[in-house]
Structure formats: structure tokens, C-alpha cells
Length: 231
Image (cartoon, rainbow, N blue to C red; front, side, top):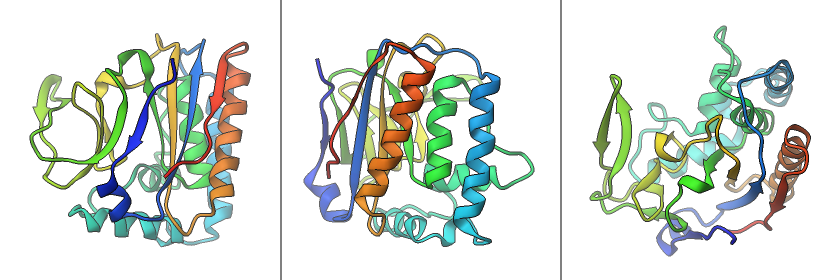
């Protein structure tokens, strides 16, 4: 059964130029970072440097649009960066990109190379469908702090991804909760590529096609479906 993904009218009104492409994949094989997935991250950092051509990530027009969207729902984008800007900043630093596991490495590489927020969720851990909404402030976001599980609540009006059990990602694509993240046991996942104008929709589609090819390469035989762009 196809995972339901919806975007609320309130989010559409906040960011009329928002588009997302979803890739649903079943029969995935995950595991620790390999030389191949690590090499993809190194290559993504090189591609990013070429794309930016000396600019800082936050100066890219797509990242400017994301900062404006964050400001529109009350977040401070210089303190809570969208996931693509945060990864890009790390990619250009001495620390470099983190190595998490194969599946996360793949989507992080696409995010950095194309400078577009990309997230991955374990479908088997999602309850019901996924919904992009403006929070009431009463929703639960279960995370970990100091090694202990804690429950946070988003700010009222904050843009969040949520399922029937609670928030899965705060501040649009800033922080994912551990409940639905991709682990080495994940076999079914949904990957979301999120863009705002002025990024052309065909650019998002190319990024999604590249990620789908990588998923097929690293998980031969997986059933992979790329959904048309949606707003």
C-alpha cells in the first residue's frame, strides 16, 4: 500500500513555491557506511564547492528562500538551519560530512550535491500517513537528550512533518525524531526531496532520479517508485 503524504493548505499559503518529490522503496538493504557510500559523500562535497563557486551556502538563492520560509513561521534560520544548509556547512568545514549508515549516506550525498533538503523515514515505523502541517503546539515530538528520551512540543505555527503518533520532523526539515529514522534494520523507506522557488522543478526531479539510481545500485532488486512532484 502506498504511503499517504499530504501538505496542508496553511503550509501552501505560507510557501506557495514549495514542491516535494517522494521516493518510496521496499526491499532495501542497509548497513554501516562502506567505502562506496563514503566516497559518494566526498564527491558530493566537491560538487557542492563547484556549485557555490566561493559563496557561503546561505548565499545560494535556494537557501535564501528556505531562510525566508523559516522566518515566516517564526524560526531563526541562522540558529536552526534547514537540513541542506546545515549539511553543506559541515561539508565545507574541516569536520566534513558525518557517516551514519549506507541509506543515510546516500540521501545526504544527494542533499549536498544538489543543495536541496532530503529526508528519509522508515515506513514500517510510520503510523498512518505523513502530513506537512503548521503545528498547534500540543503535538508530541519524542527525541533524545543526554541519553534519555524526552518529549518536546513544537511552537504554535511551526511547520512540521507528523504522522498519527506525533511529530516526525521539527521546523520543516531541521531535526528528525529518532522514532522513524533509517536504521541498519530498515527495509522500507520513503525519501523526501523538498524545494522552494526559485529552484526549477526539473532540478528536483533530476536529484530524485539520481537518488533512485543510487538506491537501486546499493539495494539490487528493491522496488522503487518515484512519485511526480507535488506541492
